[in-house]
Structure formats: structure tokens, C-alpha cells
Amino acid sequence: MELDFTFDTYKKLLKGFIDNNYHFQTFSAYLKNPKDRVVILRHDVDRLPANSLEFARIQSDIGISGSYYFRSRKKGWDEDEIKQINNLGHEIGYHYENLSRIVKKLKSYHDINQILNYGLKDFETQLTSLRQLVPVETICMHGAPTSRYDNKNLWGKYKYSDFNIIGEPYFDLDFSTVFYLTDTGRRWDGFNFSIRDKINGQQKYWREKGMVFKSSFDLIDALNQNVLPPKIMITFHPQRWNHLNIDWCKELIFQNIKNPIKWALINFRRKKVLIT
Image (cartoon, rainbow, N blue to C red; front, side, top):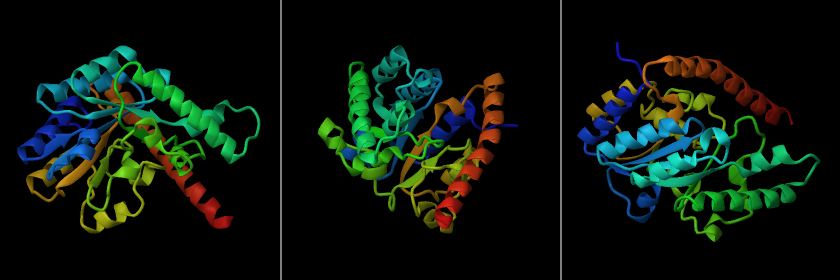
């Protein structure tokens, strides 16, 4: 029996898109010159950067490129692997989490304007560190599910274009025409477990069109039936994908524990808003 979230299944999923005449683009390439039938290939590198390097090699071997967004934390930051992925022809971006990150460091109360100010300074520092390794044109927020701060709110006061950043997916893609798929929750219909990695209103719109898939094999079947939209952004979290070994089993167990906790947190926050 074939199992999901293995590197072999990942290769079959990529092949399914290729066989059905989809092009692959990095996010920056799409912003500059979008293809008509396209997959924007995005990767959020939260931890285990070696898995991202394996993804990058798989893609390079079949002649496609993706965007890899790195967090500035030890578990997801490996300078040698960042450079190797870039050298394979992939885009490197910054997976920013500066508001949630800076609040953890503050030992006393600060108002929101101070938090935003500190967050911007931290953003500039971390972006500069990444740019000392590789070119960076785009950014993408990290959801930070346990934090009450949405990192995207940094751009309610400031402009990322001031840092020569050309795009952020949550602000610069038209999700009424670009179908968004993410492996959040180690499944493709994990939006009920996602706190911030979701597009408001899009899940309902696409659900009504029957565009809800649980497994990679469901996606492959949909490709072969030619029912997927022509423009898609797919977000992979490479740490969720492994060879069929102990790491694959650990990730399966971890996500099965994590998903109900995130679901409970989402409902707690929703009830709190209704009460207040």
C-alpha cells in the first residue's frame, strides 16, 4: 500500500502536474511574468532544513524551481543548506515572524506602536542576515499559532517595499483566481486546524466547487480528471515529508496530537471574540 507524505509520493505528485501540462514558477518569477497554467511552488522551512534540501534536489533533477522561506531560528536555519538550495536554482525568501518573536523577548508591557517599531527593526536585522548569504526578493509570514500577534500586521503600519521586497503571498496574490493548497496539518484539507495559514472566504468558495482534497492521492486523481483550476499556489512544509522510516512515523504521531490542540485553540479564540 502506498503511503502519503513520503518523498516517493511527493515525486508522483509533481509528475502529476507535469503530465497535465502545468508549469512551475517561484513566487518572484510569477510576480514578474505569470504563466497561464501554473503552480507557484512554495516551501515554508520551519525546521529540518535537510528535508528542504532533498526537496530542492528532487525538483532540480526534473528541471523545476520553487521558493523556500527560511525562519531565523536554529531549527530551520542552516547557512550551508540555504546556499545549496539557492545554487540549485531555487528562490530563497524570508519566513518572517517578527511581531510574535519580539513579544517573547519583551520583559515588560509595551503598546502596539512600540511592538511594531521593535518588530520592524528585528525584520530588518534578520532580512539583512539572510541577504548576506543569498539574494532575497520576497517574504512570507510564519503563522506562529501560539502567539496572539499576527505577523502580517507589521505591514499595516510599514511597507515591505521599502526593503526592496517585491511581494508577500498573502498581500500580492489574487486568491479569487489562484487556488491555494497547503499541507498544513499533514493533510490537504487541514484548514480547520490552521490558525493563520488560510485565506478568508476562499475555503468556502472552493469547497462549494468540490475542490477539497484530503490526501496527495486525491490531488493526483483530480489532476488526471482535469478538474483543478489553472492557477495554483501550493505550500509544502518539507519537515512533514520523509522516507518511510522512523521520522515519517514521528511526524505522523506529532501531527495527530497537534491538530486537535490547534482546533481547540481556534475555537477558544472564536468564542472569546464572541463573548467580548
